Image: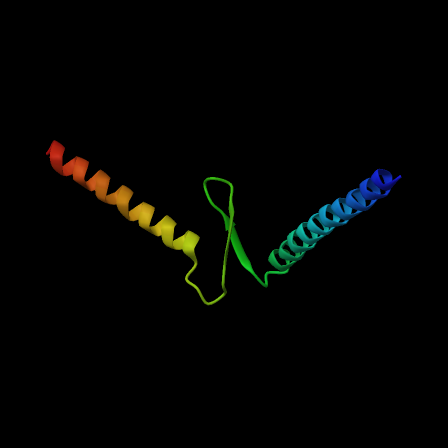
Length: 85
């Protein structure tokens, strides 16, 4: 009899904990998605598929990295033409 009540109590507590974790995750995800959609938070997806968040007053990191990559590509192509001449 005590085993049944103990199992019921433990099962209920585990269910409550798992439900709270699921609800918190869903609330946070939904809130962030809404903030990104409404453009209150800026975000971009990196090469690995991870969503990167940044503040409004920070430099647009994606544009910064794109600019750096362009500079490196230009330097490499200039270097190759100098070597072949």
